[in-house]
Length: 139
Image 1 (spheres, rainbow, N blue to C red):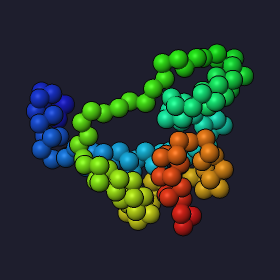
Image 2: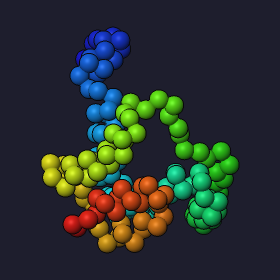
Image 3: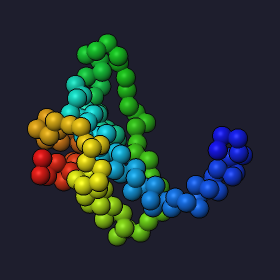
Image 4: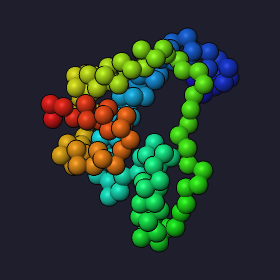
């Protein structure tokens, strides 16, 4: 593939992997990596919370200051997509499908301490927290 032009590679990607499949795979990887990262992190920084919650932004700035890394987040904003590759109904089902995949076929991807993650869910946006809470059921 590396010897092919970008146009050929892009064309193959578009033909064999639908955009909604890419989003589904992303959600599976995001959930698994978020569970592991939150399980091991000393400080949890959720971009959704950071962009919408001034208290979260203040706490983050204080934490970074405490490690001698002053930072400000004046332009922090979550990205928005104008054109989703799926319908709203499909998007609402995707996290549930991703969680089910992580409980079955992709279970080996989840390397986390569920109790630690549960304690830190309050650091996340409601949407992220609900998705990860759902992933922790049965653990």
